[in-house]
Length: 116
Image (cartoon, rainbow, N blue to C red):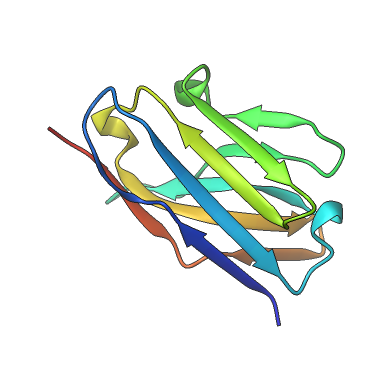
């Protein structure tokens, strides 16, 4: 059974930092793309950041230079370091692991709220 367990969400002030963590089990983690999506109220889910199994990074334009995604294959974990956060970063953040065209798994989601 595949499980993705997220942690680290919460309330943060504009300009602050937050780190999200996700630990996976039940998959050969190193072979999967891993990353983070987010969904704000009334909006579609969007890709925030991702690392492929070969180490290629993708970032949403609006978070480039502020967010950093990283993976630890030994711990089957993926992280999202969020710096200089803005109110528009408020959303539910979802951990995702994908084996292209074959498997796609999601975490339960963690709320991130940026507000003073």
